[in-house]
Amino acid sequence: MLKALIVGASGYAGAQLAYYLNRHPHIEIAGLTVSEKSLDAGKLISDFDLHPQLKGLVDLPLLATSDYSSIIKDIDIVFLATEHSVSHDIAPYFLERGCTVFDLSGAFRVNSASFYTEFYGFVHQHQTWLDNAVYGLAEWNDKQIKTAQLIAVPGCYPTASQLPLKPLLVDKLLDTTQWPVINAVSGVSGAGRKASLKNHFCEVSLHAYGLFTHRHQPEIASHLAQEVIFTPHLGSFKQGIHATITCRVNEGVTSEQILATLNKYYASKPLVRIYQKDWPALKSVIGLPYCDIGFVLKGRHLILISVEDNLLKGAAAQAVQCMNIRFGFDETTSLL
Ligand SMILES: NC(=O)C1=CN([C@@H]2O[C@H](COP(=O)(O)OP(=O)(O)OC[C@H]3O[C@@H](n4cnc5c(N)ncnc54)[C@H](OP(=O)(O)O)[C@@H]3O)[C@@H](O)[C@H]2O)C=CC1
Ligand SMILES: CC(=O)N[C@@H](CCC(=O)OP(=O)(O)O)C(=O)O
Image (tube, rainbow, N blue to C red; front, top):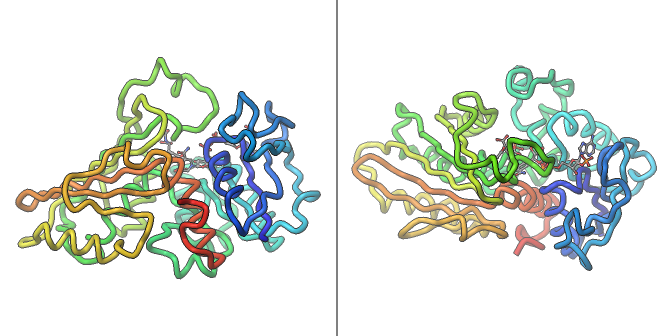
């Protein structure tokens, strides 16, 4: 059994990790932690006001600490389900002690120090770890994940955006002079569990945000090696991301070619499902670890639809998928 620690366990992504790791035949949850001053210190993660869906499954207490020295012993794997600056600060502690770290935040996703100053508001202090981090887009980077010590699990919007576009770019089916236009709508859980007016139920309707400035635009563009126009939207539903991606194909490209290319890259990938006709809806993926992809071509105009659960394929499920790949377990262990 490998021993795993979840830091930030009381959050939305952390609780999903706890659920998956508890069912995993090769993993023992060795600890669940929250911040030193957490209001949830000492509570069970399955308490009524936290994550009662875990009752009887994971009735473990939340340890409030910033000193991991007493729990680090014997830990093999650390999941950081913490905000970017927290992951940035604490990841090296675990890495230097030999743990394999799966970071769900953006702190190690893009190998550019200036990116962090511009989009995350802090100066990145760990260039060597940034150099060594492997981007955990599981369907594409499995070879590198197998030997990585630090896996930067992609963002929720970047996963939904890159999975449909990447095969078409790699196989040169897109006219890249027209930047793909990604309009994506996220449920409110994408903003995390902490209460704020911005994600208050009565305040959320449907609106675009981060126009030309969202940090996921450069994450998507750098990993696709293709500029994109990315506009996120907040919708009044709890979970899920629905991305509508409009692009232009090269002269002569047919629907059959697009389907063949998507199948070429994903037919053997159990967590990406390609639609031969019609296109997916959020209800196909909520509570499940899949990214579902459909498309329609008219002339040279292509619309791709991709959907995922932001907390699952967009966060916790992809992190566990990466862990499965890293440690040689079946990719879908505990996920399906
Ligand atoms: N929500 C989503 O859809 C997605 C989230 N992510 C990323 O995953 C990470 C977690 O997101 P999410 O679960 O939504 O966030 P939440 O706000 O729901 O949870 C954050 C967790 O971190 C804990 N925490 C806060 N400060 C510290 C600290 N200094 N040390 C240890 N724990 C701390 C919080 O508990 P407390 O405050 O009580 O200490 C809580 O358990 C973020 O980086 C996010 O960007 C990635 C993809 C999708
Ligand atoms: C709805 C909402 O607010 N979504 C978040 C993105 C989700 C997230 O947690 O960001 P990472 O994928 O970078 O970790 C946002 O736009 O900031």
